[in-house]
Length: 265
Image 1 (cartoon, helix red, strand yellow):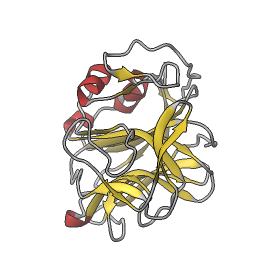
Image 2: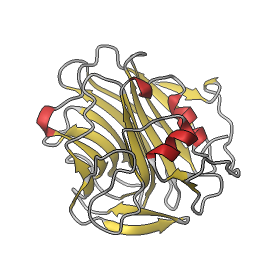
Image 3: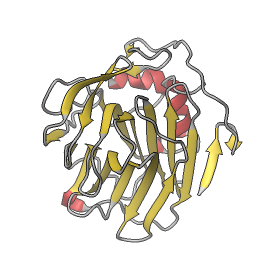
């Protein structure tokens, strides 16, 4: 496992809350300096990244609507809508198998990245944040989840290479917002994860994925946010998105994303 800071290995500086100079349409809600672009176009203007799908988690019920494309995510179970923390509204996945997901966003053997703004009602057990996985057994795909009081990132292939895992060391607390992101960079044979607390220090981790096969589980591939067949509930999500293909690659891509959304200086 490799640790990376903002300016190279093991170099970290405290983050600061700062006033944002955002693109038009990027919505600032309750958290100074942090922005939540409301459409795919304003997200691209703010970050330089054109997403396949963007979800703002402002729905009052039902499906999660895609603000960048046309890939809405269906609701499973009865998550609690309109939960607010620090002025930002989100959705609380508070019971087993509660999620928003669909058989979409299957990267196969291509690069990808995904991210979510989330919080944790408790820091015990496991809790799914986001992922794409085999709906039956989660043997193939990519996952970011809470494991007690830290975030872990898993990239799995039953075709070749097995399971690649890496955990952040940032200690999770309740009542706090976090930006969590995961990247599969096929060009660099590297999987990366990043977590930044609101007003805190960003942490990047990485793992070698040389020889890793396809992440596709065919017709069983289920992508989304919340609880999975192998991971529990207890996570609230406020914002998230996904990018597939070469545009998701780059050693600094996650750090740039966190900075451009106002989470890191």
